[in-house]
Length: 452
Image 1 (spheres, one colour):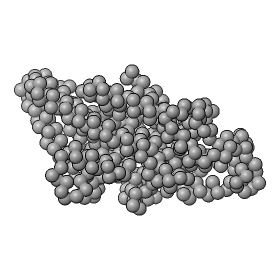
Image 2: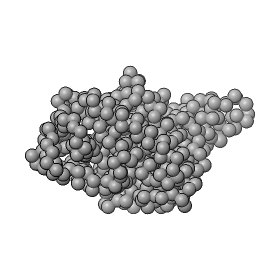
Image 3: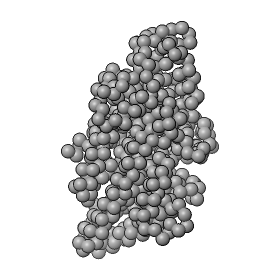
Image 4: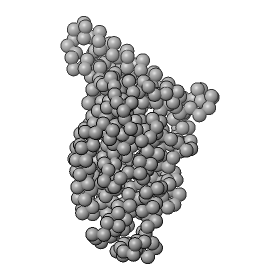
């Protein structure tokens, strides 16, 4: 674990540092906290207390406290690499970059802010939440200064720091969903800068280990929410990816979906019943239907496990894939595309309404919205309850909180979707309340309470 292990190893069993300084600390392992988090009957006040360290001017004491809090954050949010994977910002990139980051760097500060916020939520400790906000504010100031340097601005450290700030927002909550959009816009600008100055950028990881996959998802999330077309630079980057990789094909599909949704939304707003307007709407509807066929084929390709799977129905394939315990990263991308498909068919139904289409046609589009909603629900158990081994856990239990983090946007789409059934919205809201109360993600509570 690099830096984390070295910091933790500096503490001896009697609660002192190797330099002889004493620390008032309650000894408790992260795995003990994990066992309480899995108990749904536990109230917030019954959570085990994190190590309580008296305030000290000794920098070793403060560094130790930070290392312990980061350890808790990593145990619940950092994923175990799958088959020596070299991709995934939470499997490979964040641990590697954090371990080598300077104590005063944007990335290091962003991680510590998220860790303090997370521990503050679990302990209901306002002082930790305040410290986290102070770190977050300081981190934004440093980030602003970092962006004046091409070398720093185009680095993987900076891109990953912005992603961690997004995680902080989900943990701390800020009363608004708009931060997704501001982070998405900032990441889009960073991506454009990285692309236009790639020959000058001092990237600290090879391209296949860069956090660009998660950046693409965050950008398309913003584009889909706002019904805005992605800038050409995003397409240029996605087009440079290896198309034989299923994940890259998924990124490309999300980008294409953003374009189609934006065009459909634009035509809906301009619809005036004229022949030309009707023709444009009909063209968009045909494009949506063609793209959906491509999307369904992609889903089938990604979840097929053997040649005979081509004879299985979509539902059978999906159930088989879920039973095979796919990686968190693959599942996260899959539910992201399902949420994108909800938005796609939401504008599909709106286009049909503008065209005065038959009730049957509109009902078929709405049925696809509800189908994708149920597909997301089928992944909830895996994303929130399964516990693969984590390298940051002291037992063979891994994070489930990261599953809750990946579910936030899809569930937000469901509770705000005008065509989702009432019972589906209630299910999504119940899951959000559980994620918020059990997993330390305050933003989930904000989403759920906004639709009460």
